[in-house]
Image 1 (cartoon, helix red, strand yellow):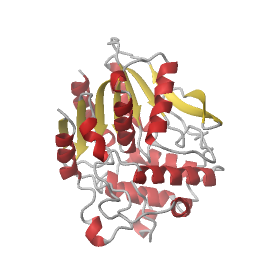
Image 2: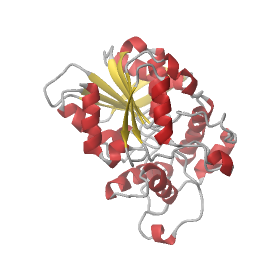
Image 3: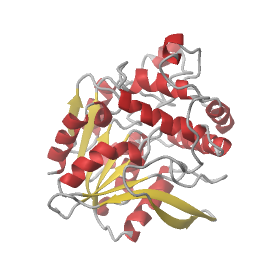
Image 4: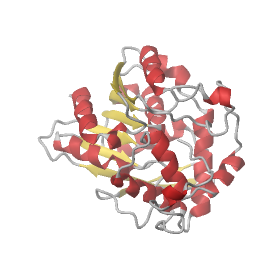
Length: 331
């Protein structure tokens, strides 16, 4: 989840984009091509008029009357669901893939009190505007924390909950990870480069195995950071990291009342703050081969699907295998 800033490998520098080579996108990802038409939900929140980008994809297969809402992670966007969206639509599902406020194609306010509850309300208001009263909620990474909060707040509007390598399966602060101020997060995010993104994702998300199709997603994030909204993007990112670190959902898993499935790449090592944690603390963090099993026991009647040897984003690493498993869960 976090991008360590450090010395760059010359070998990697020769094969991936540097910050200077990265594309430049607008503060709401203007210039980046989404896989499906991008729409905007305009609403007022905390004294500001905001825009929430989203994709609304109609079923291409025989309509089954169900809607799936896909919630992206911290270093992802609605666009990164492209292969999963196609598989769901082909099997009769309507798919809604929003970009949360502070991310990707959505507004990045200069001041916003970020909370998972606020993002859940924003998402619920979007669905109400589309006349969707019940949906399958699928959350990946940070989107898993949001999906959990959404399901706790709106249980009657969730038919099923699917958590894909959600972060927040542990409380990093309680385990001893040092606190960062928002200002410290901001200074860190200002220094983020395309190479940092690549290196972190290679080792944490993809277990040391890079595929050419991942380059597009590095360019997406690097281009956003490299664009005219650089400081505003970094500031919102800092506020979002503060939200993630300080608003655990871990202690409320026991209160989830909707049918839940955990889909876990067992080689994932994602953990907020592991880059600055003391060695004895870092050694205890991010063991998804254990965390997935623990969470499945905490969530009432939860089912667990493990993808042995996969990392943080199984839907991107092995999309065919993942989509088959997801469709079985939803059937």
